Length: 384
Ligand SMILES: Cc1cc2nc3c(=O)[nH]c(=O)nc-3n(C[C@H](O)[C@H](O)[C@H](O)COP(=O)(O)O)c2cc1C
Image 1: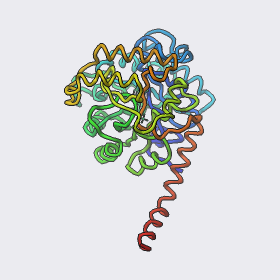
Image 2 (image 1 turned 60 degrees about the horizontal axis):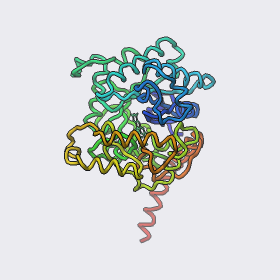
Image 3 (image 1 turned 45 degrees about the vertical axis):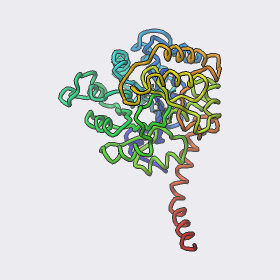
Image 4 (image 1 turned 90 degrees about the vertical axis):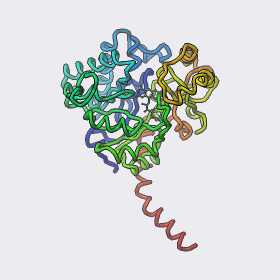
């Protein structure tokens, strides 16, 4: 039985996080994941625009409703909580990206999350985690200014001491900043992951053990994880768990279009690409539409590859907006479809229960078979 620091701290049955995947809805997915013993995350960034993205399935639109980000996040949290009332051990969390572009929305989303936890002590037993991402964690720390932040935002752990604060980071420097901020669990996000990524290229294989070596906090690996083999590998590299995005999209319960799920299953490991997205580099599934984004990206390529920040241009915004609308028609060639390299290792659309049980079973088998495998190989060597 695999039991890591992650399970000890968060209280889940499995050391697995279902990633935040805004601006899309992961509301139903987070319920399914929490029911089955992993950590389900509500994605919030789509709420910043006053409701679900126009490309969201109808059910997601209904649950989000319309309103200000704070109202929507409270409504969705309540919905998830209500759906987990018969599952006393279920745990869920909220992903709030804190990039500078989103500070206003992030503050409102954080306030809504804090309010609903304070209003209802029962909520605190289930809403156990806040995952911040896409920005600097330091302004959200206790004593942020004293710790060197230029601005202080909401001190997450002061407002909600019960919460396990996780932050997603793409390099060792950012991981050390998480440690300084007082983050409880660091999520090291390798470049093979779906959607937003860093231009600077660090894969999970390099990033994860290097973050583990440099910080004195539990680390969760993200980017490229999909099954028991990759969970076992993450544990071997020193991680306390894994976060998966693309793998969870291709599940029965995920609130994503069927076309998207099938597109992931169809892709080989060579069928994703990175281009310039609305708010920085993004990993897309390769299709006609993402190739159009590449054409536009190339026009500014030298700035981008030197790491000079530049916001999206009008042409890319137009392509992305059209690509989002085309999701509704489930038109695979003309939609913008996000996903990680790991799409090449995803070959089915299981239920969340099947997925999680298989991952745990496979990881446990691999770990317990490893000593005999190594021994066998030694014997073969000797025979030669
Ligand atoms: C469709 C999509 C949307 C995403 N949106 C967010 C987001 O809103 N916030 C965030 O922190 N990460 C976001 N991510 C990244 C995931 O949280 C996760 O770290 C990543 O998917 C892990 O890599 P994998 O796709 O190889 O599993 C998104 C990923 C995908 C595929």
